[in-house]
Amino acid sequence: MLALPAWKTRNVFVAVVLAAVAYWLVRRRLLGVAARPSTTVLSARARTNGVARVPRVTHTNRWNGNYALVVGEHAGMRQLLKRVLGGLALEVCEASSDQHGPSTSSRVPSLAVVDVDPSFDQGMVFWHSLRRNPSTASIPSVFLVEAGNEVVHRLADMAGASICLEKPFHPRDLRDSVERLLSPALDLTQPGLNGPGTPVRSQANA
Amino acid sequence: MQPADHDQLRLAGVQLAARTAHHLLTTPLTLALGYSDLLAEDSRLPPDLRALAKEASESIVIAAAYLRRLIRIGRIVERDIGLPSGLVLDLADSALEAL
Image 1: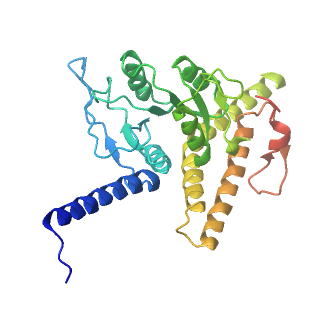
Image 2 (image 1 turned 30 degrees about the vertical axis):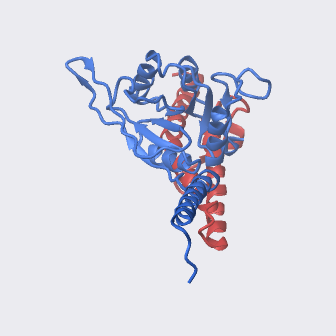
């Protein structure tokens, strides 16, 4: 049996531990092992005595520092959006009509996806409260709008939508829009990219 | 009531029904298209099931196209397709080209 001096044994042990940590970090970064999306629900009731209560956000998992805020009235739509955005390994945080006021999260959402339903305006109330908050005022947004509904298009335009995507849409169209907004070199004024509020017709509506 | 007024009211009624159908069906169609696309691109499923999901997706796209035509109705052109309940709209001729 080969007997190593104590200092050599210690060095070998340290080297093995360092190699394991390096392997874990590389695997995590390259393979996205830790990229399982998680979802968080903003928890807060509407207004209390006329004063907007501030929703709290609890983050359970993060990937690459990005998370998306999904705003909408329809629970089924929010579920779909969570699944689609989960495909991008984004953390998803959802907000529905009974929530008002800006997020108190220590981190600003990387972007927001807003499902505009002209029958209800509470989602827009929530969105405007985000716009009034300096920390969330400039987050890029994808607005999901009814095809052919000029009123909703104008609503999205006035609300400062970065991209309007017409419903129904293919999930890949939403993913493309989100990736464009998350692109660090995004310049919305660049030719070929959509400026604020410019409608994007999903291939489903081509 | 003048015949022209009657036609206007009739057209307004059809447009009201069309707008309502478009509004009510947009979100369900979005969900159906979204989930069928997600299934069609899910590599965990066998190819034959993914192909079925793609078929569903393509049919939903066609349904969405009909729905878009509904909100472009600008005149009433009817067709007799033998339904005992009466005529149907000729959607291709009733819908305006551009909204």
